[in-house]
Image 1: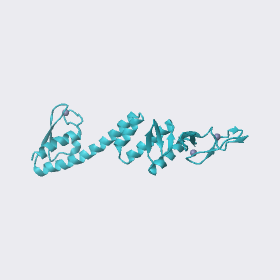
Image 2: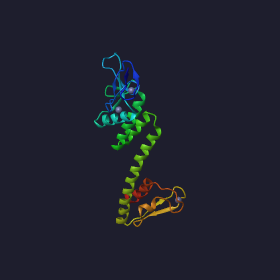
Image 3: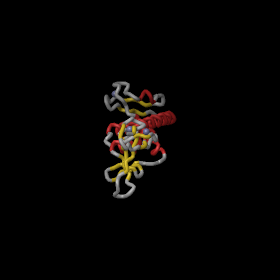
Length: 203
Ligand SMILES: [Zn+2]
Ligand SMILES: [Zn+2]
Ligand SMILES: [Zn+2]
């Protein structure tokens, strides 16, 4: 009888396996399969194992970090020649999406989330992108108010909720335009931008 150095499982003719993440030696009981490769086309599948999902995540991160990308073929996800088992693919895709977000590739990340049914994350990623656009608009609004000032113009924006006229003058601080002063409705910076652009643009 031999004992597994990792989990202590006793078995006659215990076959040692290695975690491909941390190189820890264990047995088929404590190291789970995360992928298969087929070195000989049509031949037997060679299983690949890790000791934990934490180890798999580290492995996936380092693979993605050195430029390997996930590819889909025949209903499976592949890391190079490694055909990932469904749970491993799910985790790897999540990590891939996170690296896309870090690289500001929000739409790629959102599509990836959608492909694995993570609708909530897809939506949040797109909203994150929108918030960045809104910040951009805020900056543009500052510029436009400066232009209004230079041209001695004023613009009027009509609140979509209560229809009160909201004046935008050279003295207006962009921050005060976040909500309607009359009814408190949230005003979209993109709408304000349109109202100001119309006046500035008509000159
Ligand atoms: Zn490990
Ligand atoms: Zn073991
Ligand atoms: Zn209002």
